[in-house]
Image (cartoon, rainbow, N blue to C red):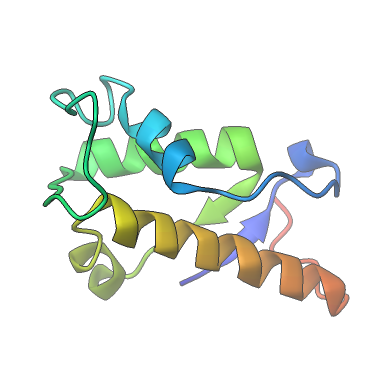
Length: 107
């Protein structure tokens, strides 16, 4: 997993990515056209590649978080809970890099 910052976040701490956040992002019809209104956290989730790309674009726009999942990561993104955990871990890694003075990948 690779995560970095964008200039748009201006170095500010952003709110953590939560299950509700990811559920809201998935409700965008460009990401997941048939998402149920109350998607269970462990319900099987199948995102096509275009949906995943759009989701990651929106995460970058809203959170300044650049995420580049490996093929193995993508295979594991099979539920709301797993997708949330993945994005939260990427966000946490970014904060740790910043705290250590690394700053992550500036784009």
